[in-house]
Length: 219
Image 1 (cartoon, helix red, strand yellow):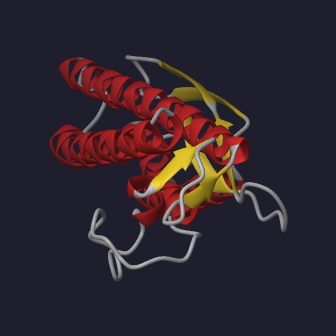
Image 2: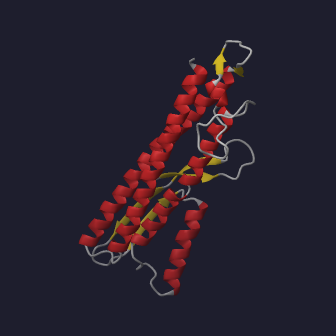
Image 3: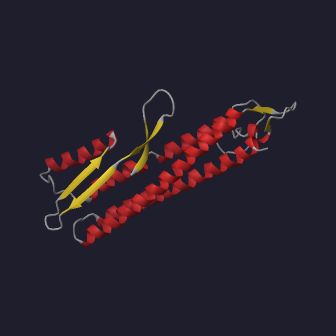
């Protein structure tokens, strides 16, 4: 599964794409699970450790319901997307709003004064009332567009993971290997709805960027 996390660096992009590989094997007879989790994030590692420690303290070591780790992992995958999309949107607003000028309304964020550059600028054309647009401006818009497209693919991939986890949960329930099928499916439905919402938000920002890019770079 792939997801985004703040990287804690003081320079460059504050966000990084992380990926974690998960293998789950369960014995239908004993209900014992074997897990292999590659490259979990620190937050995921801490939450999984907390779950395992709780089981150990309650004398259920190796016998906790196998859907619990799946829910922890899905929560990790979904948790940061809203904040990340807001960050990408703010980067778009910075790109199209860093020149002075009278406000115009395009985005309903803060004072709505972010698209003056896009509406009243041309590349390679001087005019007394024009705002300068450089090749760097167009290049930065294209880089942001690439990042948004990559993010869209990551969300699509996340939706596939959520669907796969739902199918896995139903299969485990048919084997009577989980007692948390109903609550897990309800939680999975919430994660699915959240990821679909993130997909719509990313597409909305992409459309805003495309409109701005067309005005600025291809006029």
